[in-house]
Amino acid sequence: MTHTHAASAAGTATLTGGLPTRGYAAASARSPLGPFEFERRAAGPKDVHLDILFCGVCHSDLHQARDEWGGSMFPMVPGHEIIGRVKQVGAEVTRFTAGDLVGVGCMVDSCRQCADCREGLEQFCQNTLTLTYNSTDPILGGSTYGGYSNQIVVDQDFVLRVSEKLDPAAAAPLLCAGITTYSPLRHWQVGPGQRVGVVGLGGLGHMGVKLARAMGAGVSLFTTSPAKADDARRLGADEVIISRDAEEMKRHSRRFDFILDTVAVPHDLDAYLTMLKRDGTLCLVGAPDHPHPSPAVFKLILGRRRLAGSPIGGIKETQEMLEFCAEKGIVSDVEVIPIDQINQAYERMLKSDVKYRFVIDLATLA
Ligand code: NAP
Ligand code: ZN
Ligand code: ZN
Image (cartoon, rainbow, N blue to C red; front, side, top):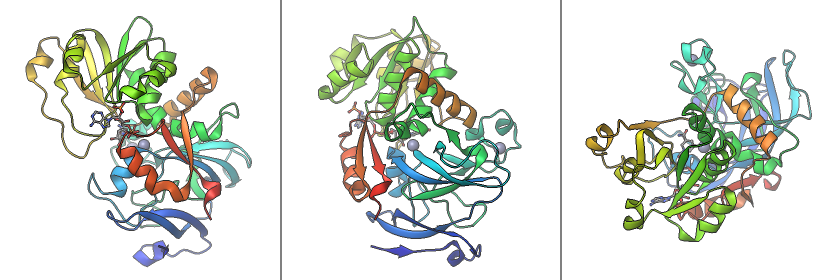
Protein backbone atom coordinates (compact mmCIF):
# COMPACT_ATOMS: atom_id res chain seq x y z
CA MET A 1 0.00 0.00 0.00
CA THR A 2 1.66 3.21 -1.11
CA HIS A 3 0.00 6.58 -1.09
CA THR A 4 1.23 9.89 -2.26
CA HIS A 5 -0.32 13.01 -0.94
CA ALA A 6 0.55 16.65 -0.83
CA ALA A 7 -1.39 19.27 1.03
CA SER A 8 -1.88 21.05 -2.30
CA ALA A 9 -4.15 18.17 -3.32
CA ALA A 10 -6.58 19.41 -0.67
CA GLY A 11 -6.51 22.79 -2.37
CA THR A 12 -5.26 24.57 0.72
CA ALA A 13 -1.60 25.23 0.12
CA THR A 14 0.93 25.09 -2.64
CA LEU A 15 4.10 23.41 -1.59
CA THR A 16 7.24 24.84 -2.97
CA GLY A 17 10.49 23.63 -1.57
CA GLY A 18 8.73 21.21 0.80
CA LEU A 19 10.62 18.31 2.32
CA PRO A 20 9.85 14.89 0.81
CA THR A 21 9.10 12.70 3.84
CA ARG A 22 8.50 8.98 4.35
CA GLY A 23 6.24 7.50 6.96
CA TYR A 24 3.51 5.01 7.76
CA ALA A 25 -0.13 5.99 7.50
CA ALA A 26 -3.63 4.62 7.90
CA ALA A 27 -5.60 5.36 4.72
CA SER A 28 -8.92 4.90 6.54
CA ALA A 29 -10.29 3.79 9.90
CA ARG A 30 -10.49 0.25 8.62
CA SER A 31 -7.16 -0.11 6.87
CA PRO A 32 -3.89 -1.28 8.38
CA LEU A 33 -0.99 1.17 8.42
CA GLY A 34 1.37 1.07 5.45
CA PRO A 35 4.12 3.10 3.73
CA PHE A 36 3.15 6.67 2.81
CA GLU A 37 5.00 9.56 1.21
CA PHE A 38 4.20 13.21 1.84
CA GLU A 39 5.80 16.63 2.17
CA ARG A 40 6.60 18.65 5.25
CA ARG A 41 7.20 22.38 5.23
CA ALA A 42 10.78 23.54 4.85
CA ALA A 43 12.10 24.99 8.13
CA GLY A 44 11.06 28.62 8.60
CA PRO A 45 13.03 31.12 10.73
CA LYS A 46 11.61 29.84 14.05
CA ASP A 47 11.52 26.15 13.13
CA VAL A 48 13.58 23.18 14.16
CA HIS A 49 13.99 20.40 11.60
CA LEU A 50 14.76 17.06 13.19
CA ASP A 51 15.54 13.57 11.98
CA ILE A 52 13.33 11.21 13.96
CA LEU A 53 15.19 8.38 15.70
CA PHE A 54 12.39 6.77 17.72
CA CYS A 55 8.66 7.17 18.19
CA GLY A 56 6.60 5.56 20.95
CA VAL A 57 3.29 3.83 20.22
CA CYS A 58 0.52 5.28 22.38
CA HIS A 59 -2.94 3.74 22.76
CA SER A 60 -4.24 7.14 21.56
CA ASP A 61 -2.59 6.37 18.18
CA LEU A 62 -4.74 3.27 17.91
CA HIS A 63 -7.94 5.06 19.07
CA GLN A 64 -7.42 7.75 16.40
CA ALA A 65 -6.17 5.53 13.55
CA ARG A 66 -9.39 3.52 13.98
CA ASP A 67 -11.50 6.69 14.44
CA GLU A 68 -12.75 5.51 17.84
CA TRP A 69 -13.06 9.07 19.16
CA GLY A 70 -14.67 10.45 15.97
CA GLY A 71 -13.39 13.20 13.67
CA SER A 72 -10.25 11.42 12.49
CA MET A 73 -8.60 12.79 9.34
CA PHE A 74 -7.12 10.42 6.76
CA PRO A 75 -4.57 9.58 5.61
CA MET A 76 -3.23 9.64 9.18
CA VAL A 77 0.43 9.38 10.21
CA PRO A 78 0.18 8.80 13.98
CA GLY A 79 2.92 9.27 16.58
CA HIS A 80 3.44 11.84 19.34
CA GLU A 81 6.29 10.39 21.39
CA ILE A 82 9.10 11.63 19.18
CA ILE A 83 12.84 11.61 19.88
CA GLY A 84 15.18 12.96 17.24
CA ARG A 85 18.36 14.83 16.45
CA VAL A 86 18.28 18.37 15.18
CA LYS A 87 19.30 18.47 11.55
CA GLN A 88 19.02 22.21 11.02
CA VAL A 89 17.45 25.26 12.61
CA GLY A 90 15.91 28.48 11.29
CA ALA A 91 17.77 31.81 11.52
CA GLU A 92 15.87 32.99 14.63
CA VAL A 93 16.23 29.76 16.61
CA THR A 94 18.41 30.36 19.64
CA ARG A 95 17.85 27.40 21.96
CA PHE A 96 18.77 24.52 19.64
CA THR A 97 21.61 23.69 17.30
CA ALA A 98 22.29 20.88 14.84
CA GLY A 99 23.08 17.62 16.61
CA ASP A 100 21.01 18.28 19.76
CA LEU A 101 18.92 15.40 21.12
CA VAL A 102 15.34 16.67 21.27
CA GLY A 103 11.76 15.55 21.76
CA VAL A 104 8.34 16.46 20.39
CA GLY A 105 5.20 15.42 22.24
CA CYS A 106 1.48 15.75 21.56
CA MET A 107 1.37 19.44 20.58
CA VAL A 108 3.19 21.41 17.87
CA ASP A 109 1.53 24.82 18.29
CA SER A 110 -1.16 26.75 20.16
CA CYS A 111 -2.64 30.28 20.06
CA ARG A 112 -0.05 31.52 22.63
CA GLN A 113 -2.41 34.38 23.62
CA CYS A 114 -5.23 32.94 25.71
CA ALA A 115 -4.99 32.85 29.50
CA ASP A 116 -4.07 29.16 29.50
CA CYS A 117 -1.31 29.53 26.90
CA ARG A 118 0.10 32.52 28.79
CA GLU A 119 0.31 30.34 31.90
CA GLY A 120 2.26 27.70 29.98
CA LEU A 121 -0.75 25.37 29.99
CA GLU A 122 -1.05 25.08 26.22
CA GLN A 123 -2.88 21.75 26.52
CA PHE A 124 -5.93 23.79 27.61
CA CYS A 125 -5.64 26.39 24.81
CA GLN A 126 -9.03 28.03 24.33
CA ASN A 127 -8.45 28.91 20.69
CA THR A 128 -6.38 26.79 18.34
CA LEU A 129 -4.34 23.92 19.71
CA THR A 130 -2.40 22.16 16.96
CA LEU A 131 -1.75 18.55 17.83
CA THR A 132 1.22 16.70 16.39
CA TYR A 133 -1.03 14.60 14.13
CA ASN A 134 -4.70 14.42 13.20
CA SER A 135 -5.07 18.20 13.66
CA THR A 136 -5.67 20.88 11.03
CA ASP A 137 -2.27 22.11 9.85
CA PRO A 138 -2.42 25.93 10.15
CA ILE A 139 0.50 26.42 7.77
CA LEU A 140 0.09 23.83 5.00
CA GLY A 141 -3.61 23.10 5.32
CA GLY A 142 -4.71 19.49 5.40
CA SER A 143 -3.83 17.62 8.58
CA THR A 144 -0.68 17.42 10.65
CA TYR A 145 1.40 14.25 10.35
CA GLY A 146 3.09 12.65 13.33
CA GLY A 147 6.15 10.72 14.31
CA TYR A 148 5.79 7.44 12.43
CA SER A 149 8.04 9.14 9.86
CA ASN A 150 11.67 9.97 9.19
CA GLN A 151 11.63 13.72 9.92
CA ILE A 152 9.51 16.58 11.28
CA VAL A 153 9.63 20.39 11.33
CA VAL A 154 8.34 22.03 14.53
CA ASP A 155 8.30 25.57 15.95
CA GLN A 156 11.12 25.88 18.50
CA ASP A 157 8.69 26.70 21.32
CA PHE A 158 7.22 23.18 21.07
CA VAL A 159 10.54 21.32 20.98
CA LEU A 160 11.91 19.81 24.21
CA ARG A 161 15.52 19.30 25.25
CA VAL A 162 16.37 15.68 26.08
CA SER A 163 19.36 14.73 28.23
CA GLU A 164 22.07 12.64 26.58
CA LYS A 165 22.05 10.67 29.86
CA LEU A 166 18.76 9.05 28.83
CA ASP A 167 18.57 6.16 26.37
CA PRO A 168 16.82 7.79 23.39
CA ALA A 169 14.51 4.84 22.56
CA ALA A 170 13.42 4.45 26.18
CA ALA A 171 12.99 8.22 26.59
CA ALA A 172 10.51 8.52 23.70
CA PRO A 173 7.43 7.49 25.75
CA LEU A 174 8.17 10.27 28.25
CA LEU A 175 6.79 12.71 25.66
CA CYS A 176 3.22 11.43 26.17
CA ALA A 177 2.98 8.57 28.70
CA GLY A 178 5.50 10.35 30.95
CA ILE A 179 3.95 13.82 30.98
CA THR A 180 0.35 12.52 31.08
CA THR A 181 1.09 10.77 34.37
CA TYR A 182 3.59 13.30 35.78
CA SER A 183 1.24 16.27 35.38
CA PRO A 184 -1.69 14.96 37.51
CA LEU A 185 0.69 13.48 40.10
CA ARG A 186 2.21 16.96 40.51
CA HIS A 187 -1.11 18.82 40.32
CA TRP A 188 -2.54 16.74 43.19
CA GLN A 189 0.78 17.07 45.03
CA VAL A 190 1.55 13.41 45.43
CA GLY A 191 4.46 12.79 47.78
CA PRO A 192 5.81 11.08 50.87
CA GLY A 193 3.28 9.77 53.36
CA GLN A 194 0.60 9.30 50.71
CA ARG A 195 -0.91 6.15 49.25
CA VAL A 196 -1.35 6.32 45.47
CA GLY A 197 -3.14 3.78 43.28
CA VAL A 198 -2.36 3.32 39.59
CA VAL A 199 -4.97 1.42 37.55
CA GLY A 200 -3.61 -0.58 34.58
CA LEU A 201 0.00 -1.52 33.87
CA GLY A 202 0.37 -0.39 30.25
CA GLY A 203 2.31 2.50 28.74
CA LEU A 204 0.82 5.21 30.96
CA GLY A 205 0.40 2.98 34.00
CA HIS A 206 4.00 1.81 34.20
CA MET A 207 5.19 5.42 33.98
CA GLY A 208 2.66 6.36 36.69
CA VAL A 209 4.10 3.68 38.97
CA LYS A 210 7.70 4.81 38.38
CA LEU A 211 6.94 8.52 38.79
CA ALA A 212 4.70 8.22 41.87
CA ARG A 213 7.38 6.08 43.51
CA ALA A 214 10.09 8.61 42.58
CA MET A 215 7.95 11.38 44.16
CA GLY A 216 8.03 9.43 47.41
CA ALA A 217 4.50 8.00 47.60
CA GLY A 218 3.52 4.45 48.50
CA VAL A 219 2.22 2.89 45.26
CA SER A 220 -0.44 0.22 44.74
CA LEU A 221 -0.96 -1.16 41.26
CA PHE A 222 -4.39 -2.38 40.16
CA THR A 223 -4.15 -4.84 37.29
CA THR A 224 -6.30 -7.29 35.36
CA SER A 225 -3.13 -9.26 34.53
CA PRO A 226 -1.84 -11.32 37.48
CA ALA A 227 1.25 -12.20 35.41
CA LYS A 228 2.38 -8.54 35.63
CA ALA A 229 2.66 -8.57 39.46
CA ASP A 230 6.42 -9.20 39.62
CA ASP A 231 7.11 -6.51 37.04
CA ALA A 232 4.90 -4.06 38.92
CA ARG A 233 7.00 -4.56 42.05
CA ARG A 234 10.23 -4.18 40.08
CA LEU A 235 8.88 -0.93 38.56
CA GLY A 236 8.13 0.55 42.00
CA ALA A 237 4.78 -0.69 43.32
CA ASP A 238 4.87 -1.99 46.90
CA GLU A 239 1.45 -3.63 46.53
CA VAL A 240 -0.35 -5.33 43.62
CA ILE A 241 -4.14 -5.74 43.63
CA ILE A 242 -5.90 -7.94 41.08
CA SER A 243 -8.85 -5.79 40.03
CA ARG A 244 -10.95 -8.71 38.75
CA ASP A 245 -11.02 -10.18 42.29
CA ALA A 246 -14.09 -8.47 43.83
CA GLU A 247 -13.42 -9.78 47.33
CA GLU A 248 -9.85 -8.51 47.28
CA MET A 249 -11.03 -5.12 45.93
CA LYS A 250 -13.44 -4.70 48.87
CA ARG A 251 -10.61 -4.96 51.39
CA HIS A 252 -9.12 -1.59 50.42
CA SER A 253 -11.87 0.91 51.19
CA ARG A 254 -10.85 4.42 52.34
CA ARG A 255 -7.10 3.84 51.94
CA PHE A 256 -6.05 6.03 49.02
CA ASP A 257 -5.19 9.72 48.73
CA PHE A 258 -5.08 9.62 44.94
CA ILE A 259 -5.84 7.06 42.22
CA LEU A 260 -4.69 7.49 38.62
CA ASP A 261 -6.83 5.47 36.21
CA THR A 262 -5.12 4.71 32.87
CA VAL A 263 -7.53 2.09 31.52
CA ALA A 264 -8.53 2.45 27.84
CA VAL A 265 -11.93 0.72 28.12
CA PRO A 266 -15.13 1.55 30.06
CA HIS A 267 -15.25 0.04 33.54
CA ASP A 268 -16.82 0.42 37.00
CA LEU A 269 -15.51 3.53 38.77
CA ASP A 270 -17.38 2.99 42.05
CA ALA A 271 -14.95 0.30 43.17
CA TYR A 272 -12.14 2.89 43.00
CA LEU A 273 -14.13 5.78 44.49
CA THR A 274 -14.84 3.57 47.54
CA MET A 275 -11.10 3.17 48.04
CA LEU A 276 -10.48 6.91 48.36
CA LYS A 277 -10.02 8.51 51.77
CA ARG A 278 -12.02 11.60 52.64
CA ASP A 279 -11.16 14.33 50.07
CA GLY A 280 -9.34 11.84 47.88
CA THR A 281 -9.28 12.13 44.07
CA LEU A 282 -9.83 9.58 41.33
CA CYS A 283 -8.20 11.06 38.22
CA LEU A 284 -9.03 9.59 34.81
CA VAL A 285 -6.37 9.76 32.12
CA GLY A 286 -7.52 6.71 30.14
CA ALA A 287 -9.81 7.85 27.32
CA PRO A 288 -12.15 5.02 26.22
CA ASP A 289 -14.35 5.42 23.15
CA HIS A 290 -17.52 4.71 25.20
CA PRO A 291 -18.48 6.26 28.56
CA HIS A 292 -17.89 4.55 31.88
CA PRO A 293 -21.03 3.46 33.78
CA SER A 294 -22.10 6.51 35.85
CA PRO A 295 -20.54 6.63 39.31
CA ALA A 296 -22.85 6.43 42.35
CA VAL A 297 -23.37 10.00 43.60
CA PHE A 298 -23.26 8.87 47.23
CA LYS A 299 -19.73 7.53 46.74
CA LEU A 300 -18.75 11.14 45.98
CA ILE A 301 -20.88 12.85 48.63
CA LEU A 302 -19.96 10.58 51.51
CA GLY A 303 -16.27 11.29 51.69
CA ARG A 304 -16.26 14.56 49.72
CA ARG A 305 -14.41 12.66 47.03
CA ARG A 306 -13.50 14.03 43.64
CA LEU A 307 -13.69 12.47 40.20
CA ALA A 308 -11.33 14.32 37.87
CA GLY A 309 -9.54 14.07 34.55
CA SER A 310 -6.27 15.39 33.11
CA PRO A 311 -4.90 15.89 29.58
CA ILE A 312 -1.15 15.51 28.76
CA GLY A 313 0.79 18.54 30.14
CA GLY A 314 2.15 21.93 29.06
CA ILE A 315 5.52 22.48 27.40
CA LYS A 316 7.08 23.99 30.54
CA GLU A 317 6.00 21.07 32.68
CA THR A 318 7.08 18.56 30.01
CA GLN A 319 10.59 20.05 30.14
CA GLU A 320 10.49 19.88 33.95
CA MET A 321 9.42 16.21 33.75
CA LEU A 322 12.27 15.40 31.34
CA GLU A 323 14.74 16.97 33.75
CA PHE A 324 13.21 15.10 36.72
CA CYS A 325 13.57 11.84 34.75
CA ALA A 326 17.19 12.60 33.78
CA GLU A 327 18.03 13.34 37.42
CA LYS A 328 16.32 10.18 38.72
CA GLY A 329 17.37 7.95 35.78
CA ILE A 330 13.75 7.24 34.85
CA VAL A 331 12.83 6.03 31.36
CA SER A 332 10.16 3.74 29.95
CA ASP A 333 10.49 -0.05 29.71
CA VAL A 334 10.30 -0.51 25.97
CA GLU A 335 10.05 -3.10 23.25
CA VAL A 336 11.72 -1.60 20.18
CA ILE A 337 10.09 -2.67 16.92
CA PRO A 338 10.74 -2.17 13.20
CA ILE A 339 8.04 0.00 11.63
CA ASP A 340 6.64 -2.87 9.55
CA GLN A 341 5.54 -4.51 12.84
CA ILE A 342 3.22 -1.63 13.76
CA ASN A 343 -0.05 -3.41 12.91
CA GLN A 344 0.91 -6.44 15.02
CA ALA A 345 1.92 -4.06 17.84
CA TYR A 346 -1.60 -2.53 17.78
CA GLU A 347 -3.16 -6.00 18.08
CA ARG A 348 -0.90 -6.86 21.02
CA MET A 349 -1.71 -3.53 22.70
CA LEU A 350 -5.42 -4.44 22.52
CA LYS A 351 -4.63 -7.65 24.43
CA SER A 352 -2.69 -5.73 27.15
CA ASP A 353 0.38 -7.59 25.87
CA VAL A 354 2.97 -4.80 25.95
CA LYS A 355 6.04 -4.59 28.20
CA TYR A 356 5.43 -1.72 28.62
CA ARG A 357 5.62 0.51 25.57
CA PHE A 358 6.30 -0.29 21.92
CA VAL A 359 8.78 2.13 20.36
CA ILE A 360 9.39 2.29 16.62
CA ASP A 361 13.01 2.45 15.44
CA LEU A 362 12.72 4.82 12.47
CA ALA A 363 16.01 3.54 11.04
CA THR A 364 13.89 0.59 9.85
CA LEU A 365 11.80 2.84 7.58
CA ALA A 366 12.82 1.65 4.10
P1 NAP B 1 -2.07 0.61 27.13
O1 NAP B 1 -0.59 0.54 27.07
O2 NAP B 1 -2.89 -0.23 26.22
O3 NAP B 1 -2.49 0.36 28.66
C1 NAP B 1 -3.81 0.24 29.11
C2 NAP B 1 -3.85 -0.79 30.25
O4 NAP B 1 -5.19 -0.85 30.73
C3 NAP B 1 -3.54 -2.20 29.85
O5 NAP B 1 -2.18 -2.49 29.79
C4 NAP B 1 -4.22 -3.00 30.94
O6 NAP B 1 -3.40 -3.09 32.10
C5 NAP B 1 -5.42 -2.13 31.30
N1 NAP B 1 -6.62 -2.74 30.71
C6 NAP B 1 -6.80 -3.15 29.46
N2 NAP B 1 -8.02 -3.70 29.29
C7 NAP B 1 -8.61 -3.61 30.49
C8 NAP B 1 -9.89 -3.98 30.97
N3 NAP B 1 -10.81 -4.58 30.17
N4 NAP B 1 -10.21 -3.70 32.26
C9 NAP B 1 -9.31 -3.12 33.06
N5 NAP B 1 -8.07 -2.76 32.65
C10 NAP B 1 -7.73 -3.00 31.39
O7 NAP B 1 -2.57 2.10 26.83
P2 NAP B 1 -1.85 3.52 27.15
O8 NAP B 1 -1.06 3.94 25.98
O9 NAP B 1 -1.24 3.46 28.49
O10 NAP B 1 -3.13 4.47 27.16
C11 NAP B 1 -4.18 4.26 28.11
C12 NAP B 1 -5.34 5.19 27.83
O11 NAP B 1 -4.93 6.53 28.11
C13 NAP B 1 -5.82 5.22 26.39
O12 NAP B 1 -7.23 5.35 26.39
C14 NAP B 1 -5.19 6.46 25.81
O13 NAP B 1 -5.88 6.99 24.73
C15 NAP B 1 -5.27 7.36 27.01
N6 NAP B 1 -4.35 8.51 26.98
C16 NAP B 1 -4.80 9.66 27.53
C17 NAP B 1 -3.97 10.75 27.60
C18 NAP B 1 -4.44 12.00 28.27
O14 NAP B 1 -3.92 13.07 27.96
N7 NAP B 1 -5.37 11.92 29.21
C19 NAP B 1 -2.67 10.69 27.06
C20 NAP B 1 -2.24 9.49 26.53
C21 NAP B 1 -3.08 8.39 26.49
P3 NAP B 1 -3.41 -4.42 33.03
O15 NAP B 1 -3.00 -5.54 32.12
O16 NAP B 1 -2.44 -4.10 34.09
O17 NAP B 1 -4.82 -4.55 33.54
ZN1 ZN C 1 -0.26 9.54 23.75
ZN1 ZN D 1 -4.24 29.45 23.66
